[in-house]
Length: 303
Image (cartoon, rainbow, N blue to C red; front, side, top):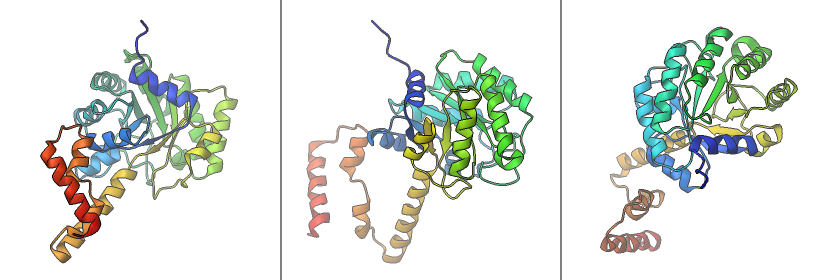
């Protein structure tokens, strides 16, 4: 019998044969929603995990914290999960250890970036990069640390706003030569730059998957997955989209609750108990199911 492909192998196939949207999940429950909605992969954003702990995305979370939450997310779904590992938590030895930890936690891939350890969000100014040879050493260590050869090392470069577009291209080529399994050019500033980047990779003989970041309110214009597919990108990340949407919804709820002292008019925005239990795969007692159906009818009819 042929062994079933690992999640990492499935992720590699997806990124090399199609263009897939990859929503970010900031906890296991959201990851389960992502899977139920029909997505084929999920992303664990460092920015989202940091925000959920009330701190900014400046590299404050360590490997143990990220691996604990990312592993919980990965184990909650059957689709592959990519984790944002920031700068890799240190030098080459630390990056190699991180690969081992994330593999054991059930992740299918790990993203590392070429900023200094006091990193910033990729769409903020004032970033500082490590030398190319330091980053290539990290990538080589990550590749050497894999036990599943399909586990994906996604090399992200933040060079566009520091060394310019040509600098981002040069670094990406070096990272591919060092053994990266995918390339992630961060904070490109136009559709033309994304297209040029893909073309220059192809012209350089680089055929590994390309990943684009569609974070909101940054330096990059919002493009569709179809547009990225036409340029040759395999994955399109939406790292903080779900979190931003959830926070706005909660903000509205809290304002209304404070004003009126009741959540009655918000019920149509909520999952019912039955729907939540269904998402959790929890066998709800039949009598509770009946009450939920009755309550849903009351919401709709106003009775």
